[in-house]
Each structure stands twice: as C-alpha cells, then as structure tokens.
Image (cartoon, rainbow, N blue to C red; front, side):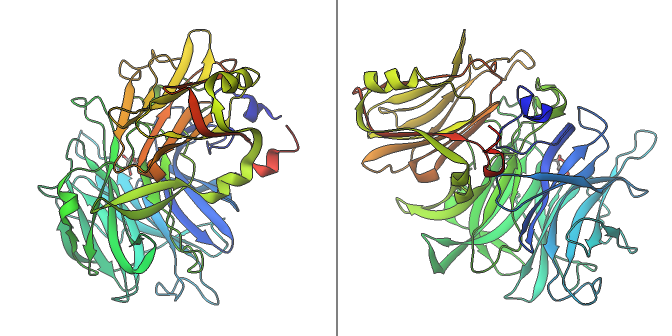
Length: 491
Ligand code: FRU
C-alpha cells in the first residue's frame, strides 16, 4: 500500500486531498463519462488559507483521482465556492465545435486597512474536460453594492423559461438571478427572511426539482442552505432544506417548510450541493458534502491532509405521514466496493457477537434490520477505552450516534457528543445502514429519512465490533468490508 493509504485517519473510500487543507465541494458536474469534484483547497497549509479550486475526477463516485489545481487566486482575489455547468448550446460563445465546461465561482478580494473584503462572481471555462481553465476577460460578471457576504453561486439551466438561473447567498438570505449567457445577470427575487434557521451566516445554497415518491408528474423544488458556525450554538455549521415551487424567478416555500428541517443530524456534513448535468436517462440527483464542521475543522488531528468528503449520496423526495421530506441514500455505486464478510438471518445476539469477535475491521458497511419498538445498537471501532455507539432507541424511536469515547477529542471542547434524529413514520422494522471508515461514521436509517454523519478519531487498532439488541435477536445482518474496486487486488 502507498504511504497515502497508510495515514491513520485517511479514509479508504472517502475523498481527501493528497495533502493539505480542503473544505467545501465545488463545481460538481458530470461530463463525458466523468464525475468532476472540485474543492476549496489551501495547497500550502493545513488550515484554511488562500482558496484555490482543487480537482478530482471519478468514473464511479467511489475511486477518485486527484488532478492538478484547477483555479488559483488572481488579481480579483481568492477562488471561493461555486458551481460548474456544461454549456450544451454554447450560450457563452466560449466554445467552437463542441460543448465545454463553465465554472461560476466567487472571487473574494481582501481589502487593506481592515476594510471588508469584496465578493464578486466570475467565470472560467474549459475546453479539455476540466484539465485547463481560461478566465473570462469580462470578470467579474456579477457584483452587489451592499452585500459583504455575496457568494457561492449555484447555477443551472431552467428549461421551462429557457435561461440560466443562479442561486447565491446574499447577506442573511439567498438571491435568485437569471441570465441568457452566464455573463449578464438580472435580479429576480430574494428568499429567506423570517423563515428557516438563521443561527449562522447563510452559505452554499442549491436549488433543484425532484419527483415525489418517484412520480415524474409530481415534482417539487428543493432548496439547500448551509449555515455557518456561530459560537452561541454547539451544533456548529449545519445544512437545512426547504421544499416548495419555483417558476424560474421566485421560490415559494410550502407549509412543510415553515419548520426548520435539517439534512443531517450529525455534526459533519456541511456545504454539500448536488451534481449538475446528470444524463437524463440516469436522472439521479447526486450529492456530496464536506465531512467536517467549521467549529473545529481547523483543529482535527489528521496529519499530511485535513478534510474529507462524505460518500456520494442520492437525494429523493418522499411523502411520509402527509409531509414531503428529503431522503438520502448512499449512491448505488458504493456497492461496488463491497466484500462480504458476514451474513446472518434471524440470528441471536450471542451468536452474532461470537462472529463479530473474529473480525478486525476499519472500513466497512453494516446493514441491519431489527423489530420496531425494540432498541438495538452497534459498537464500532472498539479498542482500549474507545468505542463509537450507533443505535436506535425503541421507546423514543430515535436514531443516535454517540462519540463520547470515540477516540481523540481534545482538540475541541464540543467534539465529544451524542447526536440523535427522530424516526418519522417507521415501518414494521428498523433498518440501519452504517458506513464506518478510518475517521468517520455515516448512518442512514428509516429508508434514509434519518441521517447522522460524524467524524471520529479512533486508534487504527480500535477495530472491534459488537452488537446489542433488546430482544436478543436481529432479523438480518450483513457486513461488508469496503475497498474501492480499483484497490481491491492490492489488499
Ligand atoms: C462555506 C464557505 C463558503 C465560502 C468558502 C470559503 O464553508 O464559507 O461560503 O465560499 O467556504 O472557503
């Protein structure tokens, strides 16, 4: 194995940069067979600093190849978060004979003498599948005279009105703009005052339609809005979502959006947005988030690199008990990394634990099912004085992750904790899908309605697994070692 793979906390199946700092995912776009993942990157430091767009590509959303830096700071400033699209119809006139990629990002310019920084939106384009980028000579293409926080443009083609739409964080709300050519933008509307959580600065929005319960004739629009960390809240940075209608100009939230709804009930899924330009025959809305939290992101105890992405997930809208909710499931490509190590049905806990005792695993997936209203839990990454507990309380119908004793935690006073999510309208049994890696757990339950993503920092030798079940029985249990297909022979 390479030295990269041996670093204690580097995930086996999660993307992290080869070295140094990473935060938000940026510019995710699918083009000519490749999933592109750009990311906020400080290539010269282990903490946040002058932002570049790092770049990685994948054919399967599991194995990522890091490519040279795509965009570096210039005279207009650092390269903050943003999106990328395929300009299929050459609306920009950047391309000659075939479509290419356009990145729409925030230029962040620091000002002298303590004056506030200036955030403006710019374009760059690529004619060679994202390998090299040219800045548009007319940059910046969008600025605002009063907002200090004016960043993270997410752009998509709105076919009903035949125009580009941009959603962008503007102060403590989001603003919507439209454009025929990505170069000239017209303000359309603003959303967010008096609705949602304002516990932190609004950042990294996204807006997209999804079918409800898989019925393409019944769609709603989903808006994601991340909120930054504020010292007054121990949760740190988080992502909320709204559902509603969108006519190309105005987003109208529905009744269900009057309550604050979170995408993830763990601490470590931030600034996530969705992939652009998925082929129509695929039709999925794929998502990835930054697996950290601004509360402690600059202090996590990794070496060589700092920052990882979540696994790729698919987003769905489902109606449950009359409410339309956003549901997340691991992208099906994750199954290509599976190597089955255990499969048991209607098994007694003592028999399961006897088998689990023989396993030593760092990076794996647990798929379990057990009867409703009975509690059950798994201890993962167990070693001397270390464990992460993941389970469901049958009486309160809550999913939880307890990282009180998960490993290193002294880098921040609020890292330790117990995080939970209420299960809404569960079926006759509980389902748990747990992704464990060298420094994370990602837990999906109740068909992806309740999701908890948490970093953990156990010792490499904390590789034990144990199960507890209130009625001493699991309906089914499968455990898979997870190794991306291209690395499988080498292990
Ligand atoms: C979100 C964020 C964005 C900004 C970027 C800077 O985590 O603060 O709003 O563009 O990070 O790195």
